[in-house]
Amino acid sequence: MTTTRNTTLPGMSPADRKRVVTRLLLPTVAEGLVQRRPTVMALAERLGADQAAIDTVRELRDRYGRGPLGLRAAGRSMVLLLDPDDLARVLSESPEPFTPAVLEKRRALEQFQPHGSLISVGPERRERRRVNELALEPERPLHHIAPSAVRRIREEALTVRKRAEATGLTWDDFAAGWWRSVRRLVLGDAARADRRLTDSLASLRTAANWSLLRPVRRRTRTEFLARLRRYATQAGEDTLAGGLRGLDVAPGTDPVGQVPHWLFAFDAAGAATLRTLALLTGHPGRLAKARAEFASADLSRPHALRYLRACVLDATRLWPTTPLLLRESTLDTLWRGALVPAGTAFVAHTPYFHRVEAAGPYGDEFEPEIWLDGRAERDPALVPFSAGPARCPGENLVLLTASTWLAALLEDHSYRLDSPVRPRVGEPIPATLNHFSLRFTAQAGSALV
Image (cartoon, rainbow, N blue to C red; front, top):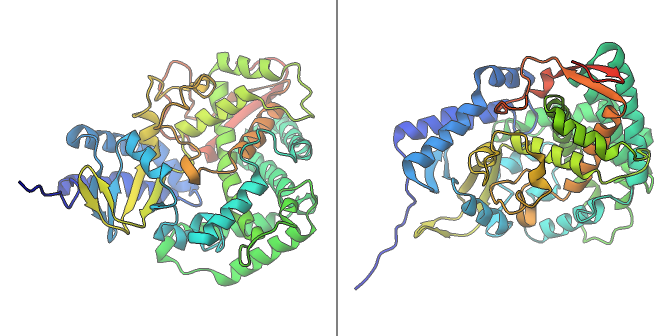
């Protein structure tokens, strides 16, 4: 007796395919996958677009089972992942046969990081990934530059905090201080006031939002990279860029060419930090735990601040900074007996996985304890910094930066969130929190009511 193997994955009805495009892919792309668009973010928050996207994927799972589902959109063969085990497989088998260097991602990120490891393949990717790991020290909770990083972060955070007492804390004020601290810890104090550098990056990222539809802005990119390299050449050993000098690397690796991605990632980290503050203001019990963690600590020195880090991780779970995880198959792969050809894009909607597929009842709740008691580690659906060999190597550095900022803001100060959308204890956490619209009242001393 002979058996035949299915040659295609189960698909979906034309109506469901249209819903995936109009309620999941297009709204997510419209918000800005590389540079968030404030106007669209405000509209998404008002219309509940992110919740609609989550509900769309949930309905597909209910209708078709655990998937994965094949579809064709934007001229591409795609596979939509619905099961945490399938997500774990794709991430654990990166970069081969599931490369992060998806065509659309390559064309987007080439706008400002043509030599970045994330869009590289083969030996170049391995060497560039090695450089990132050497520089970012992913296994260390406290990076070796932590003492100088904490000093720089606190100087900028205390300036922001002082202003907030008088005028309130807004995203614009927070972001200005955040970027000063980032430029200093990445490139050195000489870059502190150079807004032109990060404004140029923002302009290139805005162009990157258009991916295949926008040609590379070569002149702007050349000027940005030249400016960046001048700072990197002068950066001290107590900066991230300074740590790149003297590395033994293969020709063409371009260690400094990895720095644009670090700056790009720090923008998302800033959004996660202010969202964490919003969560803490609406969850007094967890705010008290966070305060207790650093109450007797000398915050001028580096500390792991594990609870605050867990709060940042859970904010990133609730509002993923990468809402669409993308991989592209470099070989034919087998799924439920179906052969999926090389060149297929695999898509995972992380808000769906983080909220619906979460292994516990905390999907729409603020539950930082899951990052401390092992629950998150055992849950393949939770991937705020991705997972597997392509996991973000800067995770611990981001958590150090974010937790240090939060401790500096919260030290002897209280905040009240005045924005229309306010995450609160006992209520489902909304699927969208537009960080651009966050506004807090701040005061020294006792709690605000």
